[in-house]
Length: 165
Image 1 (tube, rainbow, N blue to C red):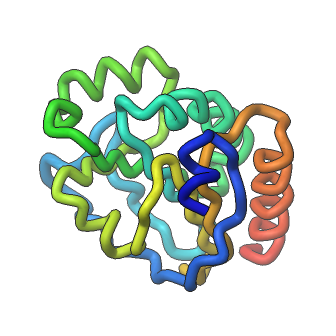
Image 2: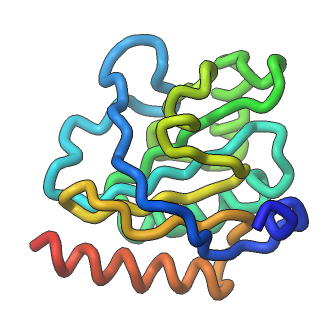
């Protein structure tokens, strides 16, 4: 699976189920918005990325499209987990989010707490949880508008929204 992620190929990872990690709801760890006030009763998408990751950069358009379609009923949260020290600068990350049209809140995971709580190993990675916080799937690697992975996520989110009613 690691080799696939390195080459920008997205796949559903056969990883163990994870809990929705606790997110600090105030303080300097949020960028491009603030912590969602209420996650309970809504499906949640965590998109783990790093600013200087090419595969992540190429995935933002697809994640932005999903957010535009479902953001009023699904909580989208970017988890920025830098690989390198120079990626930790919140001013540069703020410019990056503006340049890439990212409108969902971004959690600054500079110390990799969320990364470790998810037992993550990849950039980019997407974790999808249902409205009760139960882990549904993990996707690793690039995603593009209209590709098989983006379509699978859209179908899953539609299904989860039906279950959340």
